[in-house]
Length: 558
Image (cartoon, rainbow, N blue to C red; front, side):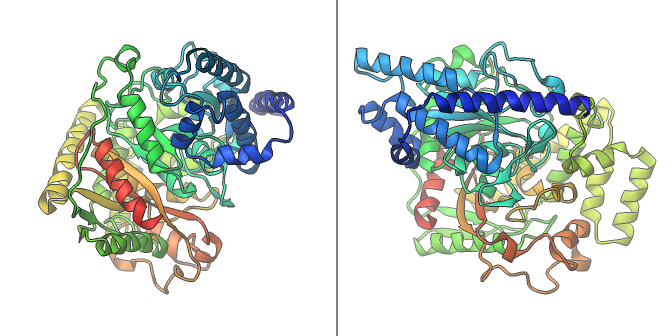
């Protein structure tokens, strides 16, 4: 057995033994109460604990069993924190019994965190066997804030290898599957988190996002999340694969099962009395604000970007949302297609500036996941071959957009990096002017991705369809995601000749998705998979506005 495999098996065995040990210590025959607890939103659960209807200990017991059940279905867990969670719960109950008060708005609420979120004395392996045993020396700032408010971390969750993919799989922990259909991915890179929440294995959770890592798994698994703009949610003491990279700003954000729970977590973080003490010095100390939307909201929307065409199910998700908003008296304006192609080009140019050497360096002897095929391919090619291939694609095939991205996927000089950083800023300014200011929008509705989901391993060909989410990392926008429908085999069949053909900008992608004998998009096989939409605000630090817009949409579609 290979060295990496021996290390992986040992690490998984330790997790599995910890799960078994914890289960033996739980009271038996409590399943009906478990279900009642886990059916509650985090907001409702916090209220019931505050009213002494449930103890913190009882909620943790319910979610220990719930997280194990979720893991058995989806393989979503990396580290389990059950023993310490039970200790924290007992201490919280003791405090409430002696004082009559809770310690904060999340008192007794079990939460989960993405594997890269550091928790003291626990590994953050991020799926690398070489990182086993490098335990965190401190909690990350966001964990400190939530624990200070009474939250109880119970587990850490799975991620893709390197986290620059939306296939949640790595050689150490294996593959996380979608809770609605095991043949499809849970998304990434916060895929374990989304699968756990969708399976009611945690009351709320934390993920991160640099290209769609909060939003893609949220849509794939039918949950809720916010991708904040940079600087309002603390990133201090998080584990990073490419520490120091700021060409595209990563963010941490909440993942939940309802809009009200997004608000609960956001209020807790923004109003925390310890925020500025534990977070990085650059954090924006902006408390949670009350936002009043106009009675008639002016939404922009689109179904397609200029890079790849959206599938029938995804288009229907947007159109049905728009229809319900218009029926409720709101105004909806088609602003598409938006320029996701330039956003994708900028993203790749910046993130590949060192040829992905830093990103790939922790792999060591670990086998490379198939999902990294396209990412690694462009960077590996000698510059003249990459430019020649790009020229051929744009000159002789309908792949001009694909060619632009390929051309920029290699190493760059510092001077070139500065040039692309400037392009990023110019793109963000122009996007806001052309979409938000030009149409005087209160908010924007967009697909999360051109596909409702992707079967396992096929992300190796389709990673670039993340352009839809990447656009709003390049603009550093505040974005929410909520579920609006599910794939319906009776409504979402693929029409003949659906791919764009000669008018395509990335025919290599569209042919995989919509053409041939076995296109990736298949409404019959995808039947019942959730579909979410993005809800985007114009400016930074607009979490409150996004939450209020999400409430309006959620009340109409769910």
